[in-house]
Length: 352
Ligand code: ADP
Ligand code: MG
Image 1 (cartoon, helix red, strand yellow):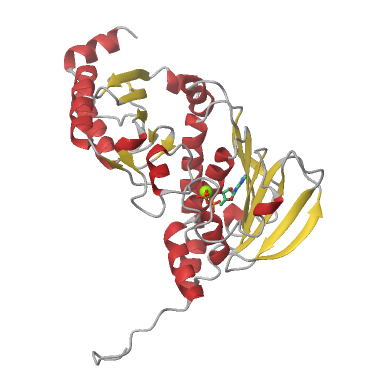
Image 2 (image 1 turned 90 degrees about the vertical axis):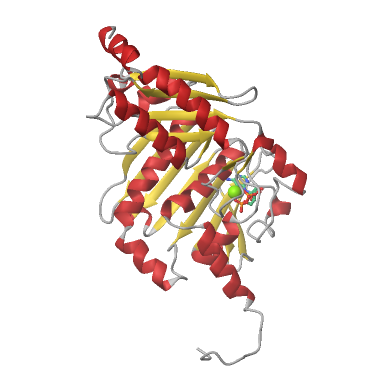
């Protein structure tokens, strides 16, 4: 706006910086709900309910039976870079939690209206907390609740006018992506009950996803996709190096039931849902050699020592940097080639 003429460098107002950064951590409805579900998992919850109003456009809420938040944390709960999970840089190399940067609640405050209800086992009564857009605690009152935490976000993106317009225009698409993401957590979580409900305007609440939390990936696949889908899958367990293995299920060569490219393809690193475009490409490419009419289902969990990867690549933590990606892909290619080679394909189809 200054037309190329030199002007003074000034710091940006803190509140504006906060809002700009928050918009990078929370990209859309799925990334917002993901942060809350991961907080519930980090809190040791065995029951998590995601409750949407008008597909999340009006509000969304995550209710858990985790450990709750102790009163001495209330004031700092939604402050930027405040976390109970990581305190020093070396901790990042032995990370066992989903969260570690203390950015989710503070970002959600900057983008919408955040309230929290929580109770630990040491408290007789729960507390209802209200935060302002800068993450400051502005109201606190007693309420009734079991041990655990409920986080509610109303009017997401109301503080970012452009994003807000996009959000409301694309809400059905974002809702679809959210259900896919919740399926990923439901598939990989063992012994966790996960429910998602939606109340569309003027309509009654409807259950859109419900898993009882079985003990194995196999049982979770059967609950979520059904027995007939499960019978089309082949178990996969391959050592990719001395310290890295991949476990899961992929479509049998003659029996791909993915409807579209990328449909029902879920990738995890140590149980964390992540995007792995190169692995997805490899699976699709090799599958095409065995079956050109269909797409493969792939549900793959890479078990990798924490020091061999970095999740701190993008603010939404979906991208992952693998220190040994080249050899992991090479070994995976060999293993999949064996499964999808023509000999094996005819064997697998005949033996059905
Ligand atoms: P991070 O997860 O990176 O620590 P968040 O902003 O997501 O950052 O959460 C901040 C802190 O709030 C967490 O470290 C945790 O102590 C607490 N917290 C958030 N959600 C929950 C929850 N559902 N149950 C218990 N504690 C929670
Ligand atoms: Mg978190």
